[in-house]
Length: 66
Image (cartoon, rainbow, N blue to C red):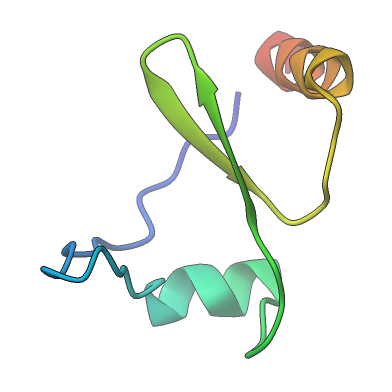
């Protein structure tokens, strides 16, 4: 599994986060792109494409085998 630290974010009082520049650059995320949030066990997973939970589970398992 490829795990890399790409920055940190602080939650504002309004509940907003800023995605670190390094993460935006690495993942080619631009202004107005939508991100999708899933809770997987006790982990927050953010993806660029909307997936149904079964497809997300397959993707995570596939990524875990690397």
